[in-house]
Length: 77
Image 1 (cartoon, one colour):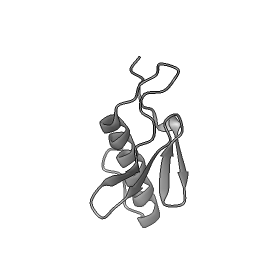
Image 2: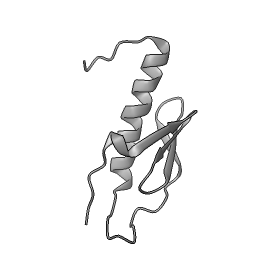
Image 3: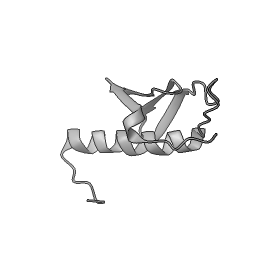
């Protein structure tokens, strides 16, 4: 079953962001998020996650973190 990716499923540890259900790990490069390990997208429980959806949510989280550190206002708020 396809599962919705939610920001609450991610944990930020230093400069790495991990999607806890799959173990997919991301970091923010100069221009965008790079997946350093995709983890397990098809879980034994029958839950399936889409890597592109994980990347999109990871990018949003990491970009917000970068804006918070640099004091740049979020243009979407």
